[in-house]
Length: 327
Image 1 (cartoon, one colour):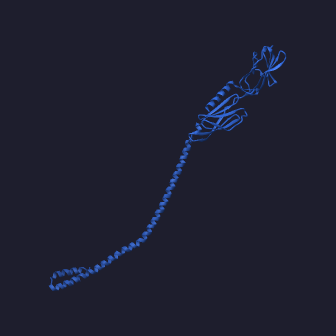
Image 2 (cartoon, rainbow, N blue to C red):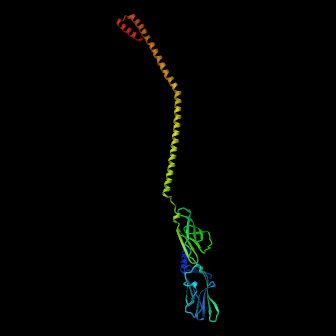
């Protein structure tokens, strides 16, 4: 592909340098340039008069062997130069309106006429510089495909290209004589517009369009803020839900505990009251039983006392103790 592009460039340079090319019997000339019309194989001694004509109806100049200078008609003054040595005619500053048929017609000494030179001239303006636009079709970092639109004057062409090759998608016909070709070399797209007399090239690298575009800082900042707000709101919602669930669980546990306490408390009170009653009964029994002991001892003591006549003093002490017992 690189060699093809080089050959195309060399051909274009050669075309521009010469400013003239031939297609069949036509001569293509760059607008604004000059072109010489030669007369081949005719010798001056045989000529009587010579006319250069434009489109058969318009005389450019007349030259006679008897005259030193040619006669240039008014329309072509300062636009042509005539060489008396070889009868050639130089056309200067050609414009598109100068396109047509040019003839050199000679009348010899015998009065016979002949056309000794004929040219069909086509004057073309330089092709305009093409306009190149690319759109990304696919890119994964290693491979990249782009859609290329190349336009020049009234012509345009669409291609799909990778780094080294381009394929025409929709061919176009050149109504204005401008041909468009798109090529790719080493990741650079070349859009060439050309006609018979000139070529123009517009090149653009695929690097900028193929690399991943980073969003602008403002956009990144906005996205970051939005995401942060969403996360914060989500966290707050989760916290509220957890709090509500915990409150519901605590209320349920408190209600259950109150129910259990209410059912257990009477039993505990009953159990607590029973030992008190029992203790009170036992105390009463003990209190009731305590006064009965002295009579038994007294009876025994009296019985023993009767037998042994104890001293009066201990009897008095026991009686004192016995009296204090019922209290």
